[in-house]
Image (cartoon, rainbow, N blue to C red; front, side, top):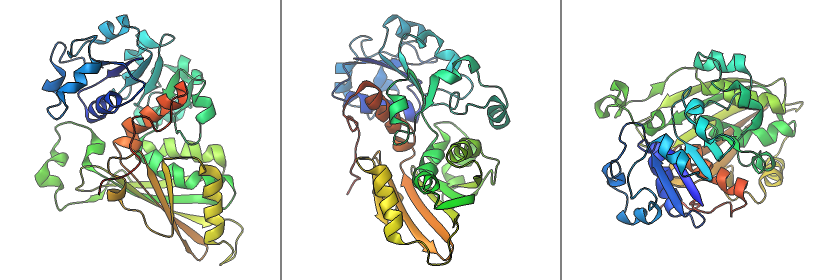
Length: 349
């Protein structure tokens, strides 16, 4: 099977290359770039093993253009490209390949909401109805039958996975207040003053609070799909970590007096929704830590009952379950491969 990685020089693209190399069902990888065509793959990733070229025989280990990649007719295209540009750049592959888009271009179906978040209308409104939201544990059946998969954002993945089962079961409702902390790699591989070591070390703080962050409408849209009355206040924070997201959400327990919900009930809901989901680890009242999921495709979930409110805790690796890993998981689901193929379940010691 041939795969193409568009935008191979960023963190997401580089990690995809490494995952696809170890994937048992991938035979060939096409590394695609717009700025470094003709360079050797090792020139942009000094940590990658030379053996990766065993799966780069079609290009001789060189970076190629989108046009050249289209000539090879890849079975799956991973688009690790900027928002508002990705859908247009993927044009040569629509209808010919399975496209897994890691930008926001297909995540939000409502064009008005998308424009409010990203400043422009969706670049390919004509294809929105043909795309599916690739939150793997929730849309497996839809993913199996779609050739355009919108990989969710990292914050939405971490926030939605613990909340959705409880919303679906009518346990929580109303307004959800979420605070989340992300590592610096969540901002991408770019030169920016606020990402300099001297700016970030020993420093953390909130940014784009409430309804200001681009991921807020993406999360809220999925919550409203589960319960039309749901509302979300979302505040992200940037922390001096290389990678990882920790999200804490507070929601009111619906129609319940104090003590009306139990830990056993909450666990039973998660067990019912995530039974057989290898990448969901339910921790109960233990509060999960980012170090536990570093390098894995897992989301660890914990909770605490506080009177008439429920506190939900979740952690992911923003580069894996929040991006490249979930993209590979989407490919596995779409093509009927073992869902964990090419992905890590266990964290590092």
